[in-house]
Image (tube, rainbow, N blue to C red; front, side, top):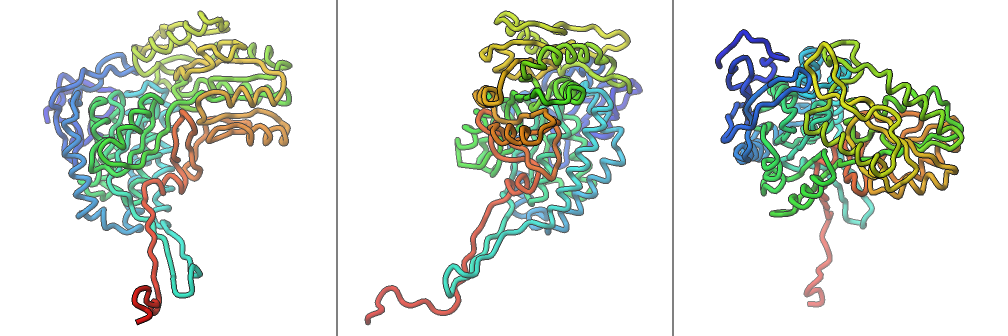
Length: 516
């Protein structure tokens, strides 16, 4: 590997053998196939990092060429390797050691996240901490995979169920939380005993490569884990490949539909899909507005609004709606946009110029359809940094449920406020949308809180809170937000298959020829 004294935005040593060379100060990276860096058959364009406004790496593949050797290695490790025959204790040891290594190198991982996503450093550190927590949790769960026994099916029959690893898992991770969502998928898959092939977003592959290197260092055999640095065709091939057994995907609803169809193209396989969302946020007349406004600012603008459960549709009771809009707009205008590396920065740039264009186009369409622009809705030039592109935190208002801002996911720092008059109305309006990932309700009335929470047709409902996820609790959607669970015991059991074993004691009475 050649070297250069030109500084990069992160430490390339974290990426291990995936760095093929340093060219003019920029790492040239390849896919990590069974612990070995593999160059591209046809290289992607250089990635412009939003935190620095210049190239942060080159390499990666526009083709699906790394898929076949990666899946073959994972198949080999599962069928004949050490990992396919590992014990729960052995898997727990690797996962716990990985958590320890990541905690020791947390600052380096946080800087990787800032470089590839543009999120502020304080958010990046939180994402690293959450991922360490996930590895720790699933390390414990690896030693507690069990089935059940049934002793009274019949007088001479004893039955049991056992959970076995599903096989080779294909894992597809989006750009918004490239490390955090990796932590929702990789630790439970490995805890279950699967081998894995990871396809991160080509915009944000660095933390996936760094995590793979920690796992190797912690004792995972290289064949058991590969990382594909490639564009969408590689993901499609991974999904339809006859030797992948389960697929875990997080991304858009449209891509999720293709994933679901592709997974049954050559052989039927199970798929967990966490797709789009348009989180209804119900603020009742009994809400504490001081608590609600602070919480809704976080729900709307955390991670630049690039969150599948962002609080992007706020339904406020008519008695408090005007005050809520005024206070929300004032709070949004005070959010500090700045260099993502600066400790004081509260919001960074969007992931790319193309994504910025798409979000701004969504705002423009919403206003053309009649939504009022309360604040934001324009690009911001931030002095003292080359980071870009920034969109000012945006508040829209409309009472029309067919408006684009109400129906569609922006995936940016945009929230929309609507009015309602009674709980029955707001529940019906919330449930009328096509998404069903998450919702929240803000009220100081406990009966009201549970009435609304139990009536909303979503996978998760927060009461006086939002966006929180914990490895102990499953997260999953309904309808166009997907299906299946991540996190919790349910998230690990997705990566297992159930087997029933029946034992008959004694001699069975002859069924044929008994009269002879």
